[in-house]
Image (cartoon, rainbow, N blue to C red):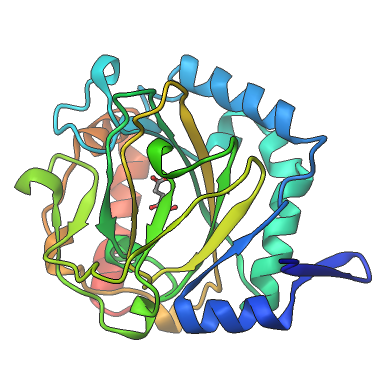
Length: 284
Ligand SMILES: O=C(O)CCC(=O)C(=O)O
């Protein structure tokens, strides 16, 4: 299925793909990554994970382990990989993802970028969640669209993405920190209804787009190869939509990764941030 077309120099969603996204809350996008970019993207990606880029600043962390030990990480994540490898911000793949999202959400810009690299055989399941549950105080939008990019053929055995169709039209459900430990990064939906869930296997360079309310997760990696994925999240920043009260599951959440990030941030900057958050909570 062709899900995109060229209109002047920009990509747009085909009507069919747009309708599918509206109905299901996700849609697959074959061939998002130009074949010429894929080898370089993978090489940079592997280098960043091998170096555990930005571990001291809290950019590299395990999503599941409250102690956040990199040697035994089963769900390692790297925040903002393009900070460590600027080419990732310049590659066509990012512009193409942006175009597609903008055709669904005009004015959207990149607000978050991360990579999850599930290790061979030991890569853990990504808990069921809705991205909206992760929006904390100060987030200047209420909805976002993510583009999840597969850097190799990714099937069920490798931990492909899975979704509950139509869940973006329902409520934001209760979430909790994995294992009930607020030092752990990942949130998990409490008793999600996943009876109708579908797996979305992809070929290398394909992507799947989802709405921030869509219930999703990914299986464990039982294969012999790492499961490399890059997520680009886009939203329209709007001060009027700013989150001013934390969801109950995010109150007092302080991860081991947060502690490393705080220790690496100058005191003046930390104080400025704290003042800003207080003002946001007060409605200023
Ligand atoms: O890569 C994964 O396993 C999960 C990614 C995810 O939850 C997302 O992109 O929103």
